[in-house]
Length: 252
Image 1 (cartoon, helix red, strand yellow):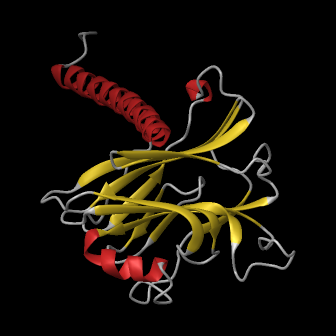
Image 2 (cartoon, rainbow, N blue to C red):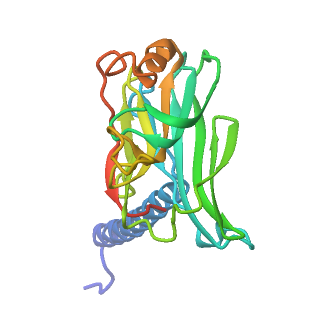
């Protein structure tokens, strides 16, 4: 009797080894794929990449600020950054109000400024950055949105070293990945104000006005409606109320 294995048995052994090797490669591949997906998700979160499910809507992602991004010479800084998906034919327009502002609209009294871009045939992405920067003992508010930028000095008695005593409203919470808005909405990118009403020179409270600033984003088609709202001629922009996310304290 021969002690050598039969060809059929050899074939079965080879097939079994092939299956085991395949399973091993499959496990290794899935583990590697899972690791790459985790790395990819982390990188997307770090740079604020957008997940745009509906390109016809405005999508905003929070962009974290690296610890080493603050340049030397800056004593203190609070920074908010967003990556924004701009739908086709939107025409992003920005309005900043500073001095005395309202808690639920772009209305206010003091300094203001606007900037806008023409509607484009294709969708695009924009990076919006807003910062409170302390240098030489003075606080300055800086804005860079859609290719436009501005700076303005804050009152000497407005202390921003700690934001715990202020109300901050943003378009997106740092805990959320994205926020989605309709193109006919007025989007409050940021509103920062004191908790108490501003005081008149005679010591009485201003009616519905707080010291602070706000930055709004809206589409070119609704510019007239937004301006009417911001001037107090209407109570909303086509019935759309303010839509910020209230936060207590600073966001980075």
